[in-house]
Image (cartoon, rainbow, N blue to C red; front, top):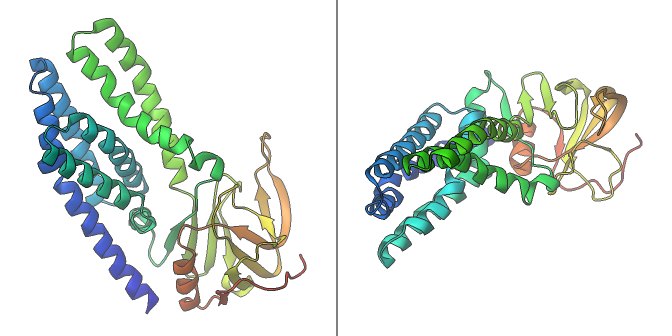
Length: 304
């Protein structure tokens, strides 16, 4: 039952995002074209060409969902709000373009959008649930990265089109490798998952663990909302938000990454913590897959 509602919600979300993105040239595109009217011919050609290229790349990503599609969508929508603010002409144009940009950004950041796109590459009967971004990266670094990616791509070509040859060449030389580095860093945040598979549950998080680990259904005692004072092994990578506690019938081996070291540390654990973006959805589907779950936080902590 829950899986049916989840799939229906994902379909609705996917079409909302696609329609909003398809309509973008009619709103933000229009005010950008107007803002470029007094620019040189080279800039008038280069700017729209870059924007149409970006629009096409994101559209393909939305039609063929992948984790990389989520990076493209979120980076592109992060740049839409300042672009609409810069380009807006009349009050009506400004309001329409600004509202559309904000709506698209909200849709791109929605957990259901992220879940839909990362599951585009899921295998068979598995279901991927994104893990929350670590708190030290959430407030500042992620936003800067999302803005830096389009800036690194657009700045150099636009400067060259403006005949600022030296500055433009430097911007291209710096922007190209910077865009690759930032895109890879953002992509790394989209491949951290809790995955429901036919055999049980897989935790895949390169920030906390050396390799993905499969926990068989028979070895899972309980998947539950974690108590605030839980002393289970913390694999949340410092992410804020509601945590889940995974308990096992017998100790499981985990190779945990150690901060500042190249080698992992091995642990035998009977309980661990992780932080999905959609905790209630994961619990509901896990229950339908015959994993024992409990929604309220456990009142007492079981021994490690």
